[in-house]
Image (cartoon, rainbow, N blue to C red; front, side):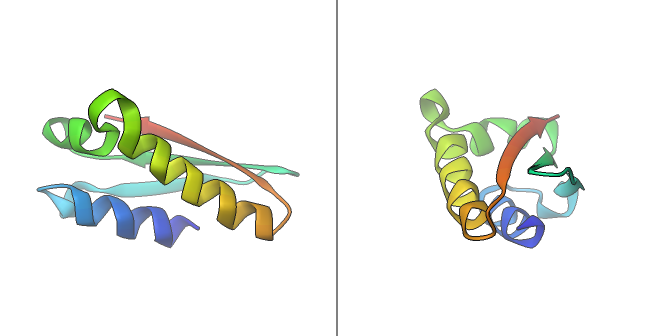
Length: 76
């Protein structure tokens, strides 16, 4: 899942070298922290948060297959 988030984020931003994804595993919940360059944050969030919601939807579907819950936090 971590690689999937990184792949999607790198495809959206202008500075893919600044993209980093960290994972904080838990019992039933996995928290992913996505960090991008400050000028690319708008591209990840999208208009009215639609792009971020789409990424979260994909992440939720993948996590459901593993019977876990995933949370995505977008950081500067």
